[in-house]
Length: 115
Ligand code: DGP
View 1 (cartoon, rainbow, N blue to C red):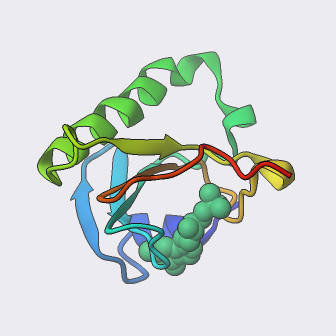
View 2 (view 1 turned 180 degrees about the vertical axis):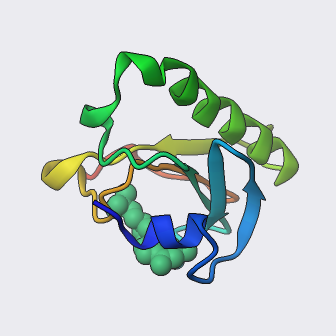
């Protein structure tokens, strides 16, 4: 299920990487929705939130803790931000490699569009 994100993680495709370690790679979204828009991506190839296993419990928590730290470093922890995981078609997932969006730097507005 390799996607462009795996290439970015391996350094085979360009990206504005803000943080990387042996578990996660974090880079700026190519189409930012706000002044801060960082994708927090597990290095492990997990397609969607549905594909998280029990053994991924620690990794899933680490994604959240990494988001918290990057929000602080971006200076948006006090003003606030939104964390989003899209899953599959109705969730609006486009890239089938699990990722957490960290979005902030302006008021985010309503949580979802009401239709
Ligand atoms: P989602 O809808 O949750 O699957 O969001 C995928 C996001 O990934 C979308 O906001 C655009 C971003 N994206 C897609 N391809 C690339 C890429 O090649 N580089 C970067 N930096 N971001 C990408």
